[in-house]
Image (cartoon, rainbow, N blue to C red; front, side, top):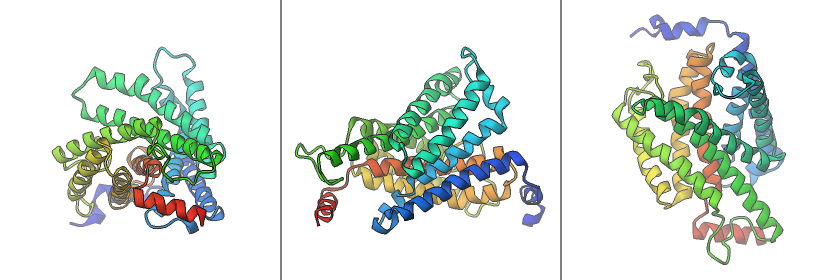
Length: 330
């Protein structure tokens, strides 16, 4: 097969319009600031093993968030059209939410008022589900893509909620002069109501996505949206089935609260792998398109970020927690 003759490859020669460039710029700036902050604070130097991957959770979540926020200013009319009809000032809400997304992205990667930003993001995405996505799904319960979209927003809410709960727990530990990650006397560890809810907000969509990917292997992996995997992607349907299997195992562990940190980490690894082998090539080929290129790539990256935020909020295993406590005291 001559890839040069494929219509998808012709997109490489298309000039990138300004609306797309602004999206790249916003996401790129936030990602760069997050990387700089990670090294300036010494987070990367201190982290060990998979904790280094968890550090990218806020960055992977925040950079796409800022990119999507920019679209509220470049595609205002389209964004305003999906605001519920009973709400006034549709254009205002499009601008307001876009500005909030950009500000929240900056907040998460710099750590400035990150707990407040994460809390508001969790609420915002939950409202998206309650006010827009769930009603749209209810109109046609058999629409699996509407279900996937609603559960995607629920996952985004869960990731932000996990971060907010973790930052709250960390602040409490510092006030009590207790090393972060050290088990409490009551055995509860760092788990809170917020992290438990966040775990279900991630686990339920993952299990649904696993079933959908097993049933429809010719569609894209990660978040099973309405797009067949391009035939020029190396491995094609293989990656959808690989993701489905990993989602099933990790989703079950998360749902039942077993090995939650390890399950969330491997789930994040799976989502990142899918991002690199499926969505980055799609993003490159369709680099001049929001709807066919960058939005798919950013969407899956943000989903990966939400999962890693959950991983960072999950309690460590007993031996791991004791090691953290000894390191903090030493």
